Image 1 (cartoon, rainbow, N blue to C red):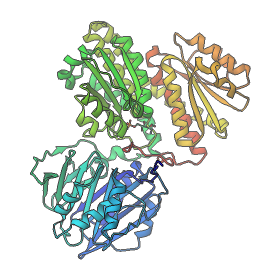
Image 2 (image 1 turned 120 degrees about the horizontal axis):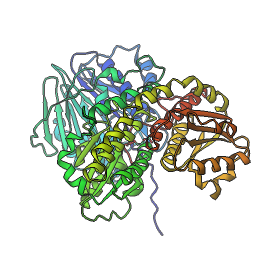
Image 3 (image 1 turned 90 degrees about the vertical axis):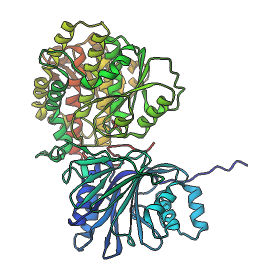
Length: 620
Ligand code: AGP
């Protein structure tokens, strides 16, 4: 008989904060959790030591539920930890929320990651007489620490960690040692913020950048004892490790809504600025391209015989466009794969080949796992990331930062545009270095790039039109999006934006695929968004639109301004400025972002924190 083991590990992907110092502890912890809530918002909690006594408050739901719960209490203390959770399995509820306490409620732990040997550890602690209160994997950690605790918290944490398999970013406090927070990191991000007479712990910069810009990015296998005035950084064996303090330039106001109703809307409207910033970074005064920090890697990159781009979600869509552009301009065979698929494929590597990771957060577990696997197969790694100091940033051989600034809305918008533009400019740069493009060719194309901010602003000015169109369709329960060539990924991205914030079932298809099945879906209730800007496949796209029309579909066309003919084919037409074909994915996605945004608002969905999602998927 085969024993099939079924268990619900309740790993979490989430946000951790910690503080030790003289400030109002609940406000530092709750505001920090609020700033991390885009990483997960099923439940949250804090633990604080007050006069040698450990207190813990946890609540299912969003952070404001917890804040409401404790606002009438006066919680005093100068050391505490907090946690906001995104559960991957099982009901997110108060019992499963972190912090988790030992049986004697003297030690509290918050955890980000997955403990893979959860079940065997659970057996061990139960045999030692411990009782699990929750269904989570994380709770085993606090009981292990308690089991090893003999008056030295750091030593007990060290001993407990030797038994953990999987990923963990941990923060631990103990009422017998109220002068410290013990933290450690393996495969889940953890950052220390250094203050004067105070110190901070966080999963990412966002939660603490308002307090300090001096950050220490813990590496895998690092642990730290954090007191009010000091940080002792060691490896898991307790051996001292040199502490590298980095100044972050990320400013807090960049993470505020700046008067917009939602982060997503703000970030959509930031896109012209993001494009200008990228131009400033990569275009010299004479119009030539520069990737200064890639000098070292360029020797290998220009020799690369193949690129394999691997990413998830929106970043994967950017990778699909990267393939078109890199093969077109750099003449390098480029494959694209979804990270969670790629990591289980046979990674056949020849010499001189790069695996490319595209990731806004730089922490997506599947994408990170792929670069680790690829490195073991002797691929070199090039990554396009937005968050500096992220795991993917630190573990790549070469990095192109996307410079879109903090992207808080769970639905990626401005960073997608930033990914597309960086991937495009890199393709031109590589093509020029490999002699396929002359400097004059590049300067001509860069001149077109410089038109993008104005063109994007022109599209954003049409927001009221997109809102009116959304009014007509927001009650539809499904959509399909179709596109060809460079705008097939745009169709995928438009569908993803709509489904992830409005919960409407939406699918993107290559337009040429309609007749191979999806056309059966077409009826007079179904909105079909057709990407039909000027392109080499425009005529083919019109034929596909006619196929939809012949079956009564409700047609919305995205076309190049001046194209009057499409008005006879569509219920609604959205125009984008005339541009070279390679820029149409950047321009045509913006109306789709706004259409999705307005539909989601009309459906009263939580645009910035859609149900079941999180901004950074740090579990596999
Ligand atoms: C995008 O709108 C989604 N939130 C999601 O698909 C995201 O693109 C994906 O999880 C990849 O994240 P990353 O870019 O941080 O790796």
